[in-house]
Length: 82
Image (cartoon, rainbow, N blue to C red):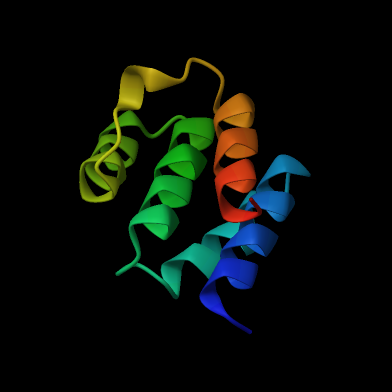
């Protein structure tokens, strides 16, 4: 599966509440900035701010940019599926 499709699946799983399987997918693509962004949002959902901020830095995104991680995931999904 191509990375874009893999990451779209991770976002779809995360939106559906399957944090664990979404996390497994993004961990396979840690060199990709969008995977890092998804990873960051997942840790935000989990409540792990320190880890989330680490992944936001790698993604070149801001922790504070989205108050609602579900809305953030929808934005990421739109970027992946344009």
